Length: 317
Image (cartoon, rainbow, N blue to C red; front, side):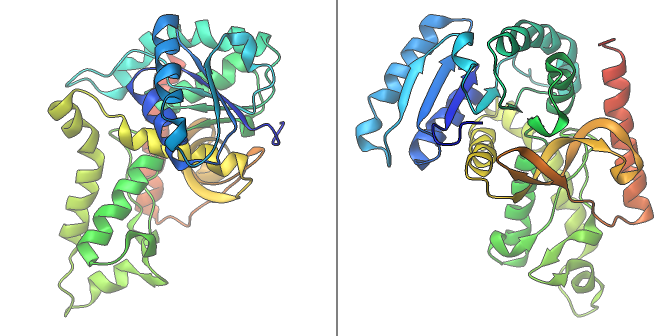
């Protein structure tokens, strides 16, 4: 990876992709070069032009242009946000077969270009599409990352901060499992600073309850459906989440983010890409941080992994 150049290629200039690009420009200093690729080349050209016109107000200089798959050759990161959109009432898993065909047309030319960096996948259902990317690219597992439950975790921390009237940055909690209907919050691992939230909930004098936690978990799980119902799609949140992951990679931060990563025996399962806390640095997934789950939480995790395995097995890749 050429970390001095810090070149990112974005494939897919729809609302998710461009929310990521816009966030990247506004945060500044994350990368020096951004290439936009889309099946609709004219749109990609227009998006690059529009972003370039705002660079005078941005925090740092960037080279932004519409490119081709050959531009992936010397890129550090290829972000995939291409795919068909999720419809109202449609689950993320319903998107699987349609988006797999889209990915077949993307991964092959990217690999043929000589690209040797890191794939970051945002397309839903993201856990399965990340695994599809891994299988089609034949890259090492550490170099294929999905956005996983990173946005869900951010939603959770925001809601918990509001519930406990605490800065969300001081809440340590994760949403793990499938980025979808089987995801869950391991309550045993939720901390307010260094204090376990379960201890707070067990205090008879506490105004906080397990029922309150259950409502928050449900709100996190159904947030995307509510947003889609209200405005047809979600894109700002995931665009910012993508920026955070890319920043962690290019900055070699070794930050813990709940990305979709390939398990190799962690949590008692192998092969599946699923949302888990992982240490992210310049070489991708440095390490999966295995949480100490309760028996009930472990069962939920394995059930979530089974959902993803069953869906992937039907593809025959």
